[in-house]
Amino acid sequence: MRDAPKPFWSPLSAGIVLGLALLLTFIITGHGLGASGFVTRFAAQANEWVAPTATAENAYFGPFMKAGNPLMSWITWEVVGVLIGAFLGAKGAGRISVKVERGPSTSSGNRLMYALIGGALVGFGARLARGCTSGVGLSGGATLAVAGFVFLIGFFAAGFAVSFLMRRVWQ
Image (cartoon, rainbow, N blue to C red; front, side, top):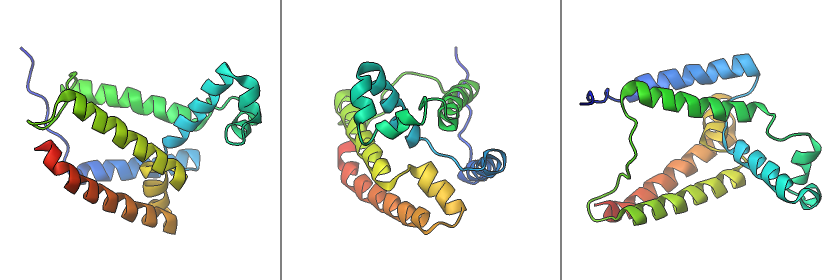
């Protein structure tokens, strides 16, 4: 029989550790955290594998290819490290399982569809904002950039609005 999973960290402890990780990232690498840029770099590389000429001529992906292999960037290694760290953390806490968390009146299929739509919208918003919550929000806020605070205000406002609308679906 499996042991009970370890409790989640308190939000204060998690916030302090995240802040220290962000500080260390600035000290060691000279820039903050980020993740959405990896998806763009991966898309550029995948397009190059399939259609090299079209990718090189593309106004969006072309500059990534001209700069060299887009996957040989710090952001790629950061994302790989996050995935490995998440797996090891979940394993150590006894929280690895395959399941779809959902409300009692929501099917697994609908829950996955909502997650896919939400993820696509957040990804699109991250490209419009030129960064994700960790890149623009955390790193931008840590450097007192106005864009970081504007992003966080918009992100939280949208999150509250969507959670209000989705509460009925979840219950």
